[in-house]
Image 1 (spheres, rainbow, N blue to C red):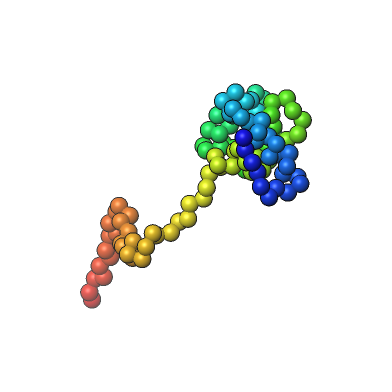
Image 2: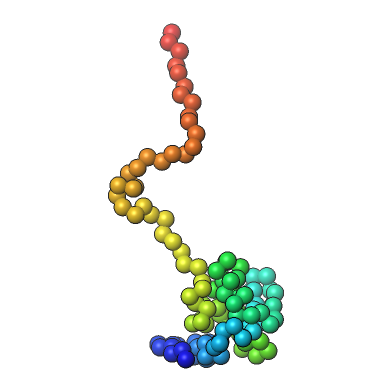
Length: 116
């Protein structure tokens, strides 16, 4: 059983989806890819989680239990949030790494000035 804490009133219905996801392997979802204006029906939960990890679904896309009326943003469904890709910071891990020379894989040609 899943418990959700600190949910806004609009998110309570999305949290109710979580308990319906158990066991996940047996649940089918309808998926609405908002940007493409495309709906896929009867998609297994495991396929939806794969699509999220692959970046095929975004946090703003919508899901619902197959055949239900109410759509929920993926980012508001706690059972799907762990599968959303997390941004990795582009930073060196320490100062020594940041100061290391970068090998770009090619040599620049040195321009020699001719003496007069």
